[in-house]
Length: 43
Image (tube, rainbow, N blue to C red; front, side):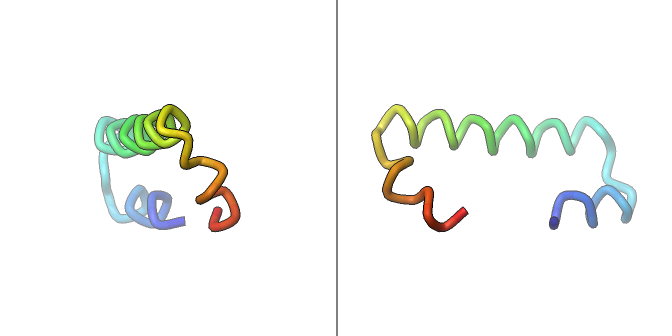
């Protein structure tokens, strides 16, 4: 997981939360647009 490697290299908790929040936000937008079903097989 890229995020955890960044944590190991000195990334702050605030930056990690920002990455997580942006990831969750992208997922929410994808579900809202109805493309989650199309991209689910990639994850």
